[in-house]
Image: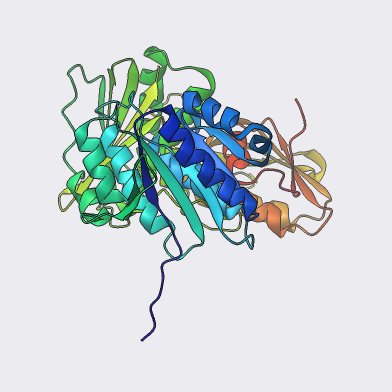
Length: 311
Length: 122
């Protein structure tokens, strides 16, 4: 009987302090460098500086990314950070990354998208020679976050370097658990507009005009126009032919929600990078790449996609 | 009809934002290319595709798409342009005059440095 070993390796690293963080991360990076593997580190800026200092000269051989920028929207991390790096090194053998998508400052609104991202990494890299280490700050993250890390990672490494298989590993269960109705808008909805194919541009014009009044400007306003166009066009093409766009502000952010009768059945929709010669498959990807946060609720009744942009 | 214009959705002049989506393609003098006005969205996609097919089939090294009156191009529209540019024989190119920023943004995201597309600095 032959055993097929999954080549994708996705451990969580639980660290309680700087020493444990550096011990786990620097050894992971050095092991990759010694084997000649391409290595990238995408962690919050304060931790990036620690790893950079810990690596010394070797830091120059590593791609360093500020996850608070590159991974601000959790939905962007797989296509824009992890696969962007892994796919750029075809034929290199194993590719190695550190990805720290959840830090203490992540909000309650962001968290479900962060947890789902961690779960979906497992699908995105199945069968690939890739190692992704995900550090979790056990001192500053809450119990729910640490419990979820056991559900999204098949292996957990503790501060002493001991590895153990997670008995509760269930990424699909976690994606489903956080697929919940989005919280109600806090009041003061600025725009509600029902659209179909003929009124698609009006949905965009009105949304953009409202966003401009609320203070969005310049390139971000153009990005917002693209986001609205892709979401509303998806409704018309894939979501039953029509939909509703809503707009409001919340905690200094512009929030735009698009609802339609479609059902998102592909959990990796919008998380696969697009090949240059690929036709289609860039709608939700564009939304993920441009937005600061994307939340989704999908089910038998339809789909709601909520996009946040900092004002 | 003597007019060489091709118009989507049979729309009238585009003034208010509430007007039906439209895209109008007019030839530039001397067969240098076309001047396009309107929006490239789902309902105007076929007009855009026809204009791009005209560019690919044209008997010129550099074919001009004057886009200063195009206010918006969605991702599928940018993709159609990238595909058309990829069909040009080596050495031929489409020259985009004043593309809307949404088009430049999407081309930069997904097709940076496409050899068949030139965007002169205005």
